[in-house]
Image 1 (cartoon, one colour):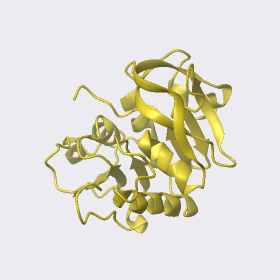
Image 2 (cartoon, rainbow, N blue to C red):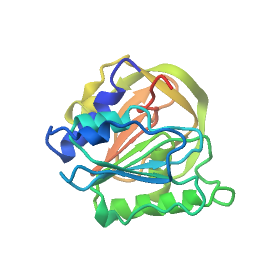
Image 3 (cartoon, one colour):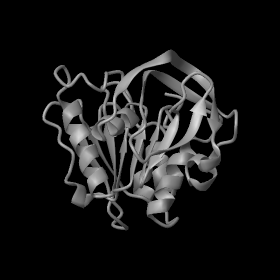
Image 4 (tube, rainbow, N blue to C red):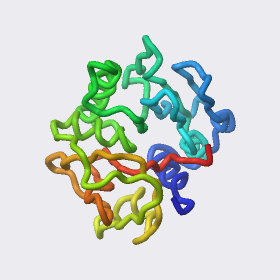
Length: 225
């Protein structure tokens, strides 16, 4: 992506909080961290980061949220016995990507837990950002099918924001043709009432908004690791 992934996640933080900095939240997450981690400055309820893959990280998201003054709490759902905190304890939810299929709940039971968490967040109107697999989980939580995309998207591809993106604080950061990093082979139908915010040259659904929920197909959190 062309330098905007951190800005997009940071903008979500600014929607939830002012611009005060949380120094402790700048510490980066490593693959060896415990399944449930809290970085708390006492300024607000934390943003919950949900990890859905053993080998993925949260990328630029923790630092971007810290720059917006947000506290964070993380949960690695691939660790046996891991459970997300009650939604009463968080200000927003960001669900990240992974290599598993959204419907492989028999092989990966935690996916059903994350789907239920997503459904509950929607019911409670808690701000939610679904990235890659996270966007598919949101679609499935709202009863929409997830299926093979016309092509497998791997690498950098141009994003095509639609006019509605100009009114969205996240997607308005992107211009037509900005390169975003992709690594997926599935796509989904939009939930009823959702608004398409961006499309792509090969896969139509790249970003959409549903009330306070935003779903994006590309890996907006990606960093050099």
